[in-house]
Image (cartoon, helix red, strand yellow):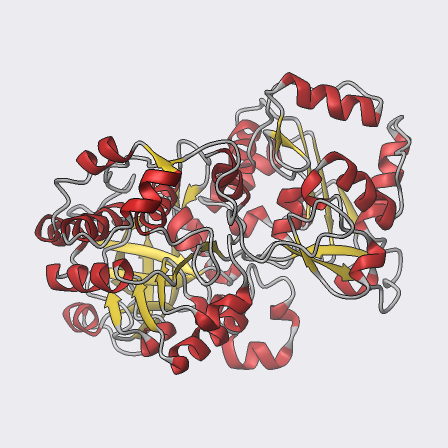
Length: 540
């Protein structure tokens, strides 16, 4: 499992974007691909036109459902039950790959016992998905050996996000849909270099290349290269830093290219925490809501104003070439970090982008064969262990590295916050097509603001009728943490009892409402489920 766990931990696709077109079955769960990853969605549509079948599992009628053969409209936060139910049917109907399980996996029998209770009928009661739809999806995915699974933050942003990912991995192992072309487990990264940042150790418990800090020989390897002593204890995750700041356990924070005031759950507490810091530095290309609270703002260059590499969601390392000079006193991120390091007493041995990539490759074999010179001819997917290696379009073709890939029993657990007599709606959050992330870039574009510059809450026609709310009327959406007022968008995209608020709009910030409950392993907040109440704002 060592290799499989490392990849799932890194969030990288096991397969390539180009392989999507030739898949026979695509299972999309917790991903609004058409709006959040439109380029990848185009490949999925091409697969559909070629004859592929598509299963979409999502509480909303997201745009990809137009192309779906089956839409599993589950209740938010019930993904584990649904996935276990699909696996139950695949086993019951003997659609699993017994040879693959025997030769490449471990722990099958206890896992098999763990899903015995997840009959389609039992899962229907938990998820709201009809038993016959669960059976149809299981037959469709289970009968294919050219099937890929795709997911995004609709899977990970839960208090049970790690369990959700494990349940997905179980499905791939059960059917042998991994280790070959046109298969795989494919998380889609949310921003242009999230993969590269993760590879380079923008995580609290690893060194570059996912070398665990807790393993002494890893520390020795990097200390020898860098000539410094390194801490042997993992740091905090970003979601642990904010509570620590609020409690006075964290005194200073350096924020690069993030806007936690908008992106972190429970916005009121986030602002309180940042204001309690002794010192806050923000390095960004615009004066974001977080930067406005900073003691020092370091103006950074955007992607077109610097050299280096980006690594995308399919593990492809690509050259980034400077096209224009940054404005004013803005500097590229690397220059800022190199100068800060020198002033703090550590002159970095490598300071140019090409030299840093070479150092990275000397420490992580997956990048050993990738250089700026090679990238001039096009992107290369890691692992690429030598200068002669062509890169790796799909992972695990030779097996799972040091051992067998284990099945992981996971039980359904309800979301951290559920509806009650006062908070009767489930709120889920996400993106729309026109805006991007916290809007720090897209909301500065007049044409985008004209088209999609206003916040909204999606409300089902049945709920709107019951509450006497008309299209466009202003409503208050309130949780136990705060409230926002925004116009109602009456739409069948959501089921009764569910509302959706996009995350982009500071004037009606969804994260004033969301719950800060964290996944016990990954420490990711439960952005996708919380309880809210709705009331119509009476106009004077």
